[in-house]
Image (cartoon, rainbow, N blue to C red):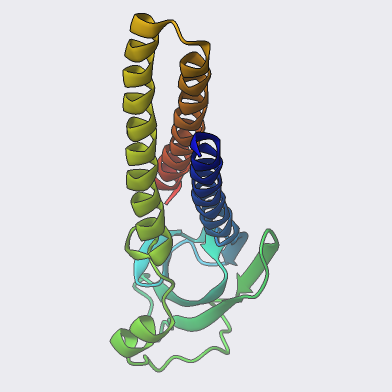
Length: 201
């Protein structure tokens, strides 16, 4: 009966670890970005993407897959200057996109759209407000709890082994330490990815 109970517990732990690994892999797969280069022929051009100022005249930025609102403001003092409003459509991951805009003979719309409505409809989701971030934080809490749980059980079993010198108890200590180590290793990967996203977003 004791062996069957251990096998059942092992299966439960392995299933839990498998679910966490699959969730982490799916989160990593959602990190889909492409390099975007925007070039203008106007030194006074101020480039905004999704309402955020990026650079003057030309810009290079990594954007997630989807539609992004582009606004290029001509900040020169010339009469009749025109601004550019456009949509950057990023349809693939890990690809280089190049956009060139002629500010002198622009054919783009000079009529300002409803920016608030457009941006809220087309802007990409910030990582820290996304479901991916919530899943990573939740899985980190679960992994931390799992690692601590098995480590505490292993310490208690080791105290029993010190008193009884039973080899089977020592085997169980090693098994519990292994589970704790696996959970802690996954927790480190989880934290590493969170730090990467914090530094790059």
